[in-house]
Length: 385
Image (cartoon, rainbow, N blue to C red):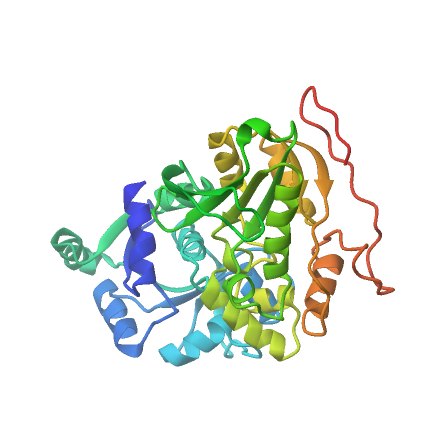
């Protein structure tokens, strides 16, 4: 899948790629960073007008409540790149009259998957390569100016999860909350993301059920102490709690903004300032309510030799993900930050719409029921969930 992995970097650089499929090749480029010159060049090389490719979530945000799939939009006349960007992620935008909507083909769907994996806004322009332009496009590919990748390979890459993780480097890093700590860095096969396992204490002396926390990176909260979330407090309290129980592992995962990346998280923050909650804000820019893939955590724990865990989390999705990956989650332990004026709505959304177990922290009347769903234990295991 080397070509598909390279495509991630070309898309992030604002370059077009050629997606090959049996029904015909298409030139594809991210709407993010697109300008009018690039849009004109794409259409000239392909010999056909550009279509706007939007995710199902973005279409719902545009008022198409019945959207069940990503769509390909023919817009005549084709708007400027500025208007295309507004259609891709601006709150309150509306499709122009006369827009023709069709379901995406495999190549267009693969393009959106690649953009999401590259943590770009999942919106693209696509141009079918006409027979008259086949030779010109082939020349661009042969010269190295244009990367060609099969749509099937791109889909396979995006469905495969993080792939094989490589253990790159490690060092002892004493922490204020856990002096005996070691950082172990893992790199994903496509080279886009790196994750860190913070190994606390002596593994030989860990409890039988190893205390483990999965913590998604949050630059604003973890590093700068943002008041919009409780991430920084959860991070430090998680390290301290693991240390107090004899040691274990905190997995620091490169999944900013529930997997949408820092740029999109900041876009979502702007939408939250307009009154949207965190889930609706993510949908406006084309994402689901949670884009994370916790298979990476399973792979990291496997390489660290951890199979039986006490999971420090308030998120049922993390329990379920590890359980179905074959990790024996024998119990769960809550880990809270502080409720503040600035983060209260965010925490309520996590409880009410994400289903997080925050009933011991929040006291609002509209809080969801506190009962936790029962999970089937791993074979031969018992569960205290």
